[in-house]
Amino acid sequence: MKTLLIDVRRIMVSLQLTVVLLVFGMILVFAATLDQTNLGIWGIQQKWFRSFIVFQDLQGVTIPIFPGGYLVGGLLLINLIAAHVDRFKFTWLKAGIFLTHAGLILLLIGELLSGIFQEDFHMRLNEGQTKNYAEAYREHELAIIDTTDAKVDDVVSIPEILLAKGTVVQHPDLPFRVVTRAYYPNSFLQSPSAITPASLATVGLGLSVIASPQPVTYKPTETNLISAYVELISPDNSPGVFLVSTGLVAPQLFNYAGRSWRMTLRPKRIYEPFSLTLLKFSHDRYAGTDIPKNFSSRIRLKTSDGRDDRDVVVFMNNPLRYAGLTFYQAGFENNDRTSILQVVRNPSWLVPYVACALMSIGLLAQFGIHLAGFVVKRSS
Image 1 (tube, rainbow, N blue to C red):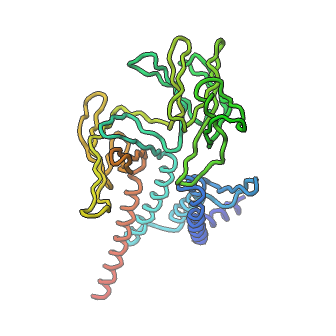
Image 2 (cartoon, rainbow, N blue to C red):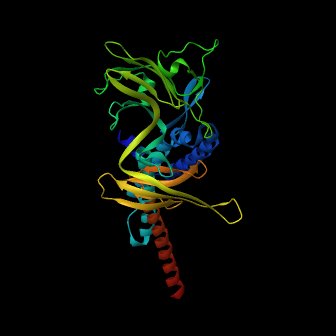
Image 3 (cartoon, rainbow, N blue to C red):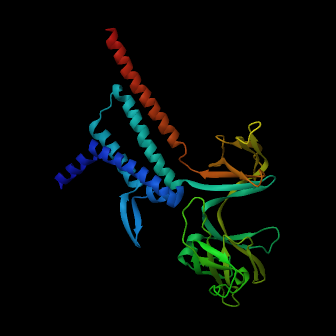
């Protein structure tokens, strides 16, 4: 046992392991770049970098093919720390090396924290429009809304993953259970015909529109159209089976238990205690050309308690940071009348900046120490 521990220790502090892991890292980046045409940026992040093992489907069989980013990066982090503890002793002549390696360690930790905690959303604002929520890019929810009170909407949100698993949902604010009868991660909507299968829906828009399953796409230029057939079940007079889909423009409307309801499958929303109003979107071009010069959004930020009410301008490389969120100018549409903001929640966003600063200081310090020593030798 003692011999085994010594061997493990020798491997973990070895320079050979460092070289092997760096080679694995380069291969990982190269393979992920090639696979990007199939999965898109988000897909390769999840498959290649934010995983311990990369799996590939070969003729219906899923097999491991390569160590993932978490495994390669984690081993590199352990190797770097172990080598320092075992081999290096701090002296002022090596202070720059220690700072550089500390920055590298912090950079690896920062990437891990970002992979775990970072959330990405987007907010589309028309000029004059006010919103207090952002929407997820890839996550969806089934929203069942009690609209009986004209002043207040009571919303029950069911995550898409529960629909995919077929989980029966019984929420205390709903007078019925929600049961998934079919779930399609990608689908095609069409009108019923003699050659299409019978619709699973018994009420609502599903009587005139049918969802057919389609292969999931990962191409960045294509979008998966998510659909599901959900049944609302109660002890008496159940509302029936509804078709919900991200491809349906209108929500499902129905009445039950003396109340009015609206049901829709939509991107997951994150609500905040403040609102943003798009006052003006500017799309400036260089004179006499169509070359973009500037994209900017003048926004009014207002909190629900009235403590903060101010105008801010968001443009490229000048995001708005507020309440733990960062709002970037990401795009525009609707003939320059709609601004698209990328909304990022990343508690560890400062870590890469600190890591790069440490590495820069360390490299400059080490270079300065060697330069000073060289000058002293030349002058003596």
